[in-house]
Amino acid sequence: MPVTLLKVTKAEWERDPQLALDLARIYADVPAERLPLPAGDYIRDQLERQGTFCCGRFNDRLLGAVAMNVVDDAWWLSNLCIRKTTRRRGVASRLVTLICQEAFRDGYLLRVAASTLMLGDELLLKRLGFRLVANGEHYEMDPKASLGGKG
Image (cartoon, rainbow, N blue to C red; front, side, top):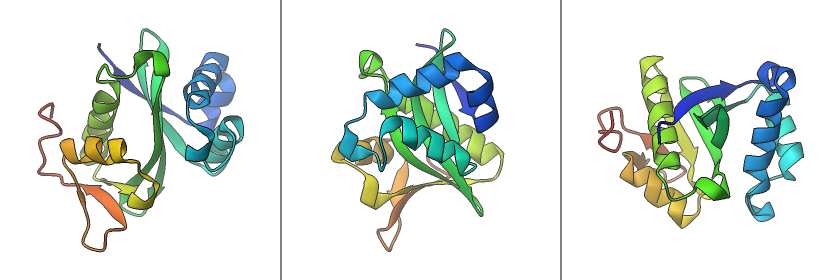
């Protein structure tokens, strides 16, 4: 499945009703306890705070998304979700790999807070080359990692 990366900012979200609908569908699939707010409020809040969604796109539709906030020299990722209908097809791995490639090209590290992760999330991050930092607070992508063999 040829997934491409699309960054969705507040401006794109407001301008393109299909992007807004696709993001809403993606986060509607997330169990409520995994998001800090109801899905619609979460999306709006993320974009209002100058955050971005890094999205996996296939055939002009978004299949998955992860919230991204820039802090100093790092992109902090949170709340990765793949549409239920396309899970278990490599979309999450491909999306994270594309984000890694762009972050490193632009000179950023990738980080994910450890406290927010479920076991499956941790396994995906480790498989793609993320490592838990010494204090155990977050995972960080090692720039020397192979990006899951797709780099």
